[in-house]
Length: 404
Image (tube, rainbow, N blue to C red):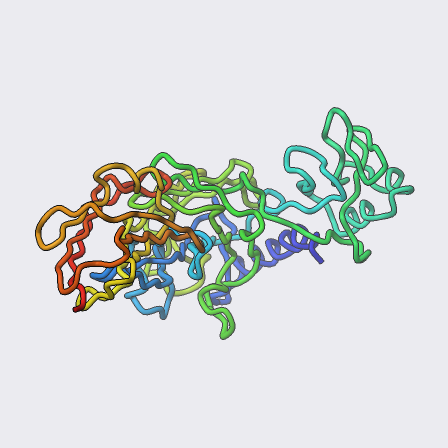
C-alpha cells in the first residue's frame, strides 16, 4: 500500500531505536542517536580504455562494507555521466538511521493541487486511515477528508478542477485511488528533496525513478546484493551529468530524522574499523554538513568504432561520446580537422545523432569514398564540449589507414 511507506517508516524507526539499546550485536542495528549520517554512497565508476571505450562498475565511493572486495571501495574521479543509457548513473546513499519519508516522497492526487502538479506531500503523523479518508467518492469527500492530516487539498487561488467539478482552494481534491484499495495509487520522489552540484550545474533527481528505501541493513541479501542495503535514498539524475566536474550532494533542510536532525556526512563514511553494527560505529559530524563526500565525473571521451587498419573506404567514420555533445561546438570551425597523407584535408562532413543519452559523431567523405591505401589523421580539438559546456580535456587524435 503506497501511503503506508510514510507510516511504516515511523514504526521501523521505533524498532531500530529499541535494537540500538539492546546488548545484542547485529549488523542490522541502526544508530538513531545524533544526526543521520551518510555511511556509504554506491555509484557507477567509468573506466575508459585507450580506444575511449567505457567499462562501468558499481563502487563504494564513500564508506566501506564488511566483507567487500577492497577494490570496490575507493574515492571516485571518473564517475559515469550518461543519462538514459543501459548503465545510467544512480547513487545509492545509505544512512545509519531512518529519515522521515514525508519529506522524501509525495502521493498522487486526482488533479493538479499546487506547484507539484497532481502530487502532494503527506502531513507528518498521517496514518493509512487518514489517507483512506481522502480516497472516498467525490460527493462525500469534503465531509470525509478533513483535519490536520488531510492530504491532496487544493492549493491554487483559482481552485482546482477534478473532471467537471471545481474544487475551491483549501478543499480536498482527493487521493488518486483507481483500484479503490484505500491507498494512493502512485507516489514519487519529491524533486527538491535532494540535488547534486557538479561544478556550477545543479543536477536534480528524476522523481519517477528516484526513491526512498526505508529498509535494508548492512548484510547484502542474496537477491539484490549491495543494491539492497539501506536505509537509503536512490538518486537517479533527471538528465545527464557534466563531464570532468566535482560533484557534491545537497539536501533540503526538511529532510531530517525523527528528532528533526538534518543529514551530515562523517569524514570517509563507514570505516573499516567499524566491523559490527552501525549503532556502535564511533563517528561524528555536524548536522546539515555533507561536505565530506564528493566525487569527480569522467572527462568527455570519444570511442572509435571503426577499423584503424584497412578501414572501409566507403564507410563513414563513427565515434561514440560517453554523453551528449553540444552540436554548436562540434560544428564550429577548427573543432574537427583532418589530414590526408600528411596534407590538410577538408573534403569531409561532420554530423551527429543522439540516442540513449550518448552522441554518435559521424565523419563522412564528401566524395563518397576515402582514397585507397592512404593514411588519414582525424583530430577533435578541446573546443568540443558536452551539453553542459565541459570541453574535451585534451585533443583526441585518431590515425587510420584505408584499404586498397
